[in-house]
Length: 169
Image (cartoon, rainbow, N blue to C red; front, side, top):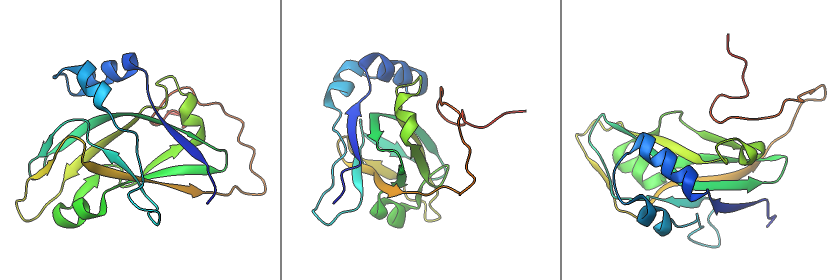
């Protein structure tokens, strides 16, 4: 196997800022201290499990924004693709709002410390409430290589997070 990345926690200050902004409640220091770095469950697993920082309940049709407290240092030429855990997607139609999260290698150096966040939606058609316990896997991240075109001339430098590399008009 090729080693192409490393998971770390973002700083407590970054986590507390995002948690307060999006969740607002709880003992933020205790939540931060209990964060687990993503891990693969088995030697054959492609996905690294991202764990719920607190108990999460998502009613049918509802969504929640979750700061994971995690960042990833990724080698150039690789990306980290984020998906809901397969079982949660299959049983509840749990979905990422952007369908697949793409974490670029230069996101690590962004102003937000490369803080990986997600917005999950319970898109059930069977009136099922999603319940994920603190410490249970909620997402999986898979490292994937990518290529560029022969005439690629990208020279931009990332500063921000979501949508920061696209010109806005």
